[in-house]
Amino acid sequence: MIKHPALRIAAIEDCDPAFLDQLQADLETFGRMTPYGHLIKDFEIDGSYAMRCATLMSDLDINIATGEDLKESLQLTEDNKDVQAVANQFIRALSVKYGLMVSPARKYPFAKNNPKIMCFSLRERKTYGTVSRINPHLDVGVVGEDGLTRSFNPSTDIPEMYDPWASTLDQWREKYGEKLLEFGETPETAWMKP
Image (cartoon, rainbow, N blue to C red):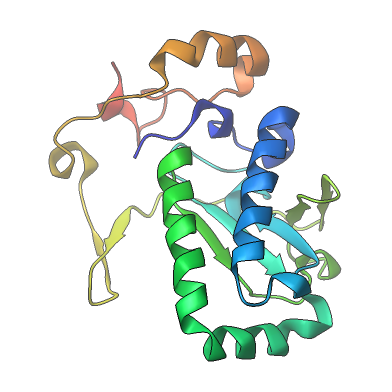
């Protein structure tokens, strides 16, 4: 997948506000589709985008904050697997829409309450946490049907890359300036250079 230009930045806090509105609206729709939607307090982007070190190959990690209702939300999912399956299909469609793996999970009641976890609250549009770690290497892999991750070489395992947003790149360059990550600029994406 080729990442949408609005997400070709290192930090989610630098993302275009209108695009964040769209992302939040999509996640709110996902939330309403889940059996625990009424318990969701926030969508917190954590991982590399929150830590200001996202690359062109980064996924979008999202903590679904349910606060003190975390256990109840997990039980509702267990009791309503068919409803959750439909919501999961919606997330797969968002991954295609945005050109990256959208990875929502209920990892913490609230990530923003843990100072060792950097996160960006979509509902508050605020970054929390003070500890930042930089990913020293790119771990590229694919998850097989058996759930195991296998390394792959993008230059040989992906026959051809086409950027569906190529015609809009100039407007994103103008909007983001030097913050826009470009394919071909890093060793990990040099093979993608047009």
